[in-house]
Length: 399
Image 1 (tube, rainbow, N blue to C red):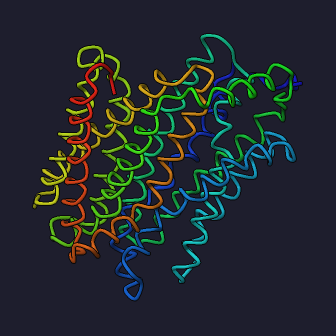
Image 2: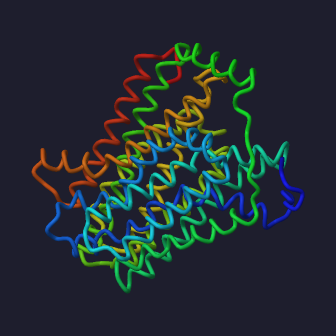
């Protein structure tokens, strides 16, 4: 039971609960540091340097699965505190390190901390709140985490004026979150072993065979889309600084526009979808694909900023659309399962992005940032062609 000294209705308590979600969105705030990292670690392959912002996604996947194991042993509050402390220490550690592989190890540990917490953000809110307040808090999770990501990306960009090392100091925000949770949130237990929960799990496993195959197709699309979208994060700095029309700080600002755009699209998605319905998907693919070519050929920081907003908007429409469609295609009892499938696709796509692009670049014989973005544009347009052809062959179903 919760101690009476804790007041879930207080603003400070709500801030503590919502701040937990920040941990899950800040892994990539140091993406703007890639050009400076590449300059400091010239003896390492570029794709290894580009793994610095993406490698947490691999350990996030692993520790999301292990999260329930930790909660059984430590309890929910201690699991959150352990994840936050691990993320904070490993997040700030690269400031003190001079070996790239040690930095990558710290980044992997950072992802482990995030993965421990990731599944708990909504569970904690469900424990403390009900009804309309719970729904409002659910909505605020995305807003708070995305806004924090925007502000921290900008802060990282400012710190890049001193050194790439200073950008990692942005993770001190996690120490603040740790203190808030430590002193404001009580320990608690969520009973997941009731007969009803066990019966629901059994029924869900039986319903896996009922999942529409199109869910797998959308999962593949999500994997590809996150792979190509993460290419913007890891190649934009090299593109802009390589062409000489911007620096690492400006790149961080451009990347923050991506998160800011995502917040806006989530707000207007319902209205846009109401009018465009399923045609929204091919339109967004077309816009996204073309924008890659335009970014690759841009020579202006202002034009690139506008194009980043456009491509982030298209991507946000696509990812939100996919989550909506798979929730419609899957049985209600399987919604959590298919959402987990999408999260696996997202994290795998983000993690494999540098290696995926390196493989394609090696085959094409061109390893420049421009060629990587052009390849991404081609891949997205290929998805569009595949979607159109599928729609023509399966006219009696909505894919």
